[in-house]
Image 1 (cartoon, helix red, strand yellow):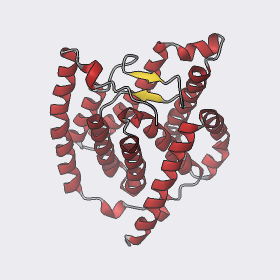
Image 2: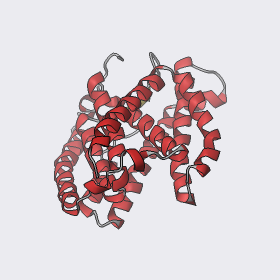
Image 3: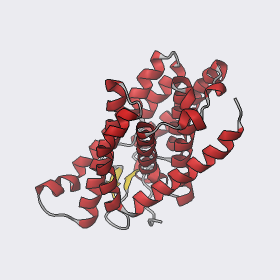
Image 4: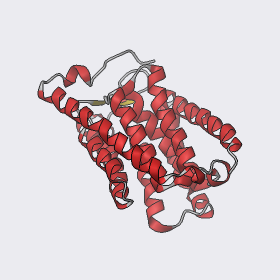
Length: 273
């Protein structure tokens, strides 16, 4: 398979995803209206070939939480009144995005094990273990963009990126190229902004946009098919490397909690960019 289409399509898709993060971060109300509107594109999902309950659940399990978090952003930044809006301003709400992230990783971890990608599956399990707890290390900022921030570390972000990329490489080689784009944008965006805690927000928007595009019109197998890249030996070594990297990180994470230094090493309060 020719490589040149990927040279064109992947940078273009990367740029589109970057623009999506920028717009939906900056315009929190527009983000809410847009993601609500996406629910009405379901006829296109059927025309686009979304078949089976699993695909429908997968799409909705990403878009609906994105809508709920968008509602929370509006509630917090505008300090809305009333029982409905106050619910989203309560710190207990922050267990919701924590739980969604946990379940998202757990789902892929189980699938990884079923595929025989055991070392990468173990990496996914340890990623679940090392998610900073809510609500202490999560918040929705009350100024600027009303960002959802999860105080993950740059190391955790990298480990998530390489773990998830390895998972997609095993589970859907056809979509590895497009998935690599959404992962790299989410990885690089917080680095450019010098705010690792924006990783969860960037990941949320890129994943939701990607699944929506696939549901409405799945062009990726035509313009970004990477099935020819698959190599079982690479997959095996990649999973082992991921596991070797996350074991010391897990010990470090637990040590930060044990020594009560996590407040300094996890939480990094900096001005919004």
